Amino acid sequence: MFMIPERIRPKPLNNRGAEGDKEKEREFGANIIGVGDNGREAVHCLLREGFKGIRWLGLHRNPQNRYPIGVDVIATYGSWAGIENVVLPFGGGMPKSVLQFYRYRKRFFQTGKPSFVLADFAESVGRDAAPVAAADSYAIAVVAIPFIEKIIAPNALDFIEAKLYWRFQSLCQHTSVVIAMDDDVPSRIGEARNKAMAKRQSDFVGDLLHSIQGGANAALHWQEVEKFFSEPRRWGRCNLWRAWSSVARDVRSAMADVRRVLSCGGALEEAKRVFLMITGKDGEFSLMEVQDVVDALTAALDEEAEVMLHVNCEKEFADGVRVNMAVRLDAG
Image 1 (cartoon, helix red, strand yellow):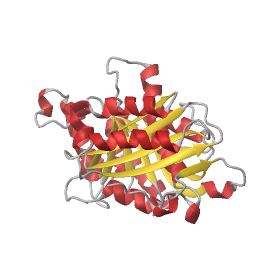
Image 2: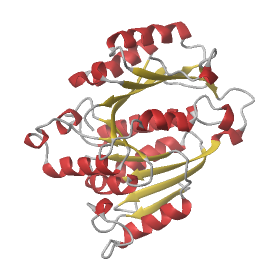
Image 3: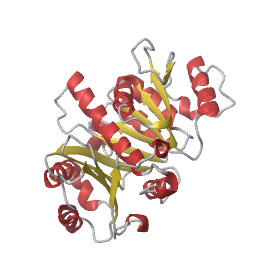
Image 4: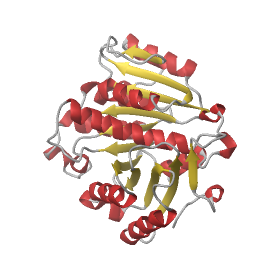
């Protein structure tokens, strides 16, 4: 079943950057937390999009690392691992940096607005701080998780380092929505891998933020998107999604790459819910092409699967066509 909101019919293209757009349409409000090197790089990418009204926060063990102007930074001194399990105000002995974060979040974060935590569990600070940053804040955690297929397997501890496994479990326990991305080339290491992953995370979040900007005139409403990601709410279990973002010369090639990654382990074919965004330059792809790839996608899905689709058409987009897709996993 397609969940395509009425407000994007019969013109499902959201013309981002069209003439007449008001700068204030971007001032819709959101909270973004970038954790570690991954989060810093993702925030760098998002800032280039020119969003207004967003509260940017970096959590990093080395606050001397360069952050752009406009990003507040809290140094994560001390161990944050397990802090998400501490019930406030019974937090005696908590690192001062954690208390600083809690005070900051209470004072500055906008309630009822989109909130995202960006981190990489390949980094120790990502494993330690992301569950704390996302806990009890209704934030969606968009995280890079090494070996996602193995970490959700019943015998995960036979293959995965125990600390990685338990920190991931804690993230899922304390966060209502986790969107996980795994590297499609696990052997790739170093700065190139880190930047590529952060770019995919920022592309996913950035395209989502663009789709909900504009208040009452937005193509999508945040409440609809949040509901799609977070329901049904299950006690003691988060809604775990696996996602991928791919750019190619045309929509078919981008979709093929996304399907290749998300089909690993049968995640795509078994999914009951699929969130899909397609972004490209105005005139570079047609609704017919979009319909063709969506028809092919639905043919591969479970017949009861629900799909939320959004198409962005931009005046300036140099990357060809970008497809972002997330599929909900039953194991959460």
